[in-house]
Length: 324
Image 1 (cartoon, rainbow, N blue to C red):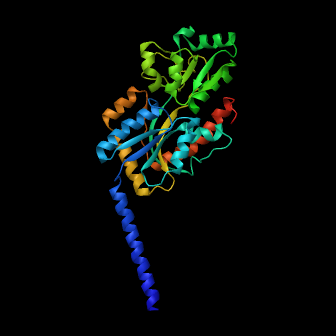
Image 2 (cartoon, rainbow, N blue to C red):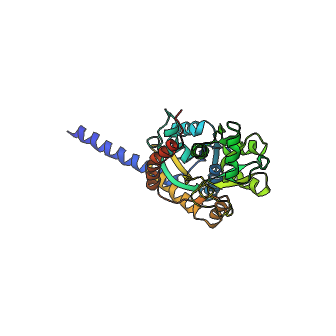
Image 3 (cartoon, helix red, strand yellow):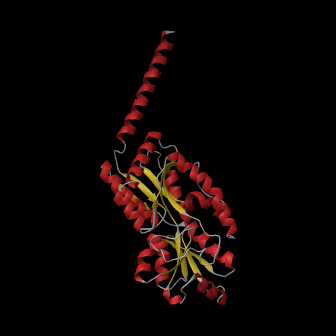
């Protein structure tokens, strides 16, 4: 009886010590550099957002935030790397609606589950795409672009690197009956580079990737894919205003961690990210890029992902895209 009591008491002590150790670990977090995996190239909206937030986290916590860009395969490469990382808070995944909401309908089989394999941490930003062409194409409006495409079936192409840009392009093709060819890229900046060089006819791209070139005249903006105009491009109509109904999808980026990341660590990360997004200089810099800060809780982000998956499934089906 005494031996049983001893083992029971020993178990209680070990449990208390283990709990105290976990609490101390959470309080000490972070005690080493944090890696943030980004599924797009340098200069993309998600990358710019990550670097702005990461710099502020480094200032606040005294630990370096390392950005790990892993573009390609519709975000699958980055998602797999993030899914397999230790669930200790030292590897984060700054993903987008492409990876977490649209991919389940774009691919017949995914090597990850956007809900089960990740812990939602915090929303980051929202934004939509703008339709841009090379001025040498000789069109000044969406209507002129559609007319040109109808006279040259199969000869015009569009760059895409995310589900949002792909659905925008395929939606234009499906809605208007034009024959244009989608060309996949690892990230928006890569497609923009080829568009400026004249290798691509058009692209639906995020504003951070295209806005500097629109302002210098290297690219011409024709329409905004959101349901409202951009304050940065107030003279550019929405696609619906330009005569193509059905547009209104908004993309987003958000912070995730591998499933099983401790709740205390997630709560600390959420509070820090929301604090940073509320800073006037960060809000101003994001707004100047055409991005809207999106604050919220971990639970709200989880609900967003679950609600966005069927929404994107509907949009992808309506755009005539078949899963690969």
